Length: 128
Image (cartoon, rainbow, N blue to C red; front, side, top):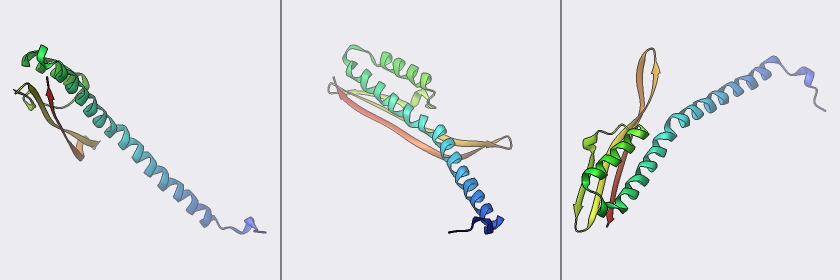
């Protein structure tokens, strides 16, 4: 049998330190996921919208397509400039391109500190 009464307080302290370290790692991971996962969700949502609009390209003008896509960009809060959305028609095909970057940052001491910049590129060519 193991006599638990002889364990030192140091052994119990190491256990508490382990819990603190792993708790911190889990908290940082959850916070990062909370801030970064929406970038990818909005990217795929926008890509789906581009595919949907491209399927009906024969019925819409370029201005109508641009207006619909820019409205969706604004709704999703994607930090893309209107001139980053490029539409090209050729040989009964529509090509839609959009490049933008999302920035993961933390605010510390009143300043924003960039942790990572995520580049996104949508390039869809659809025959209509």
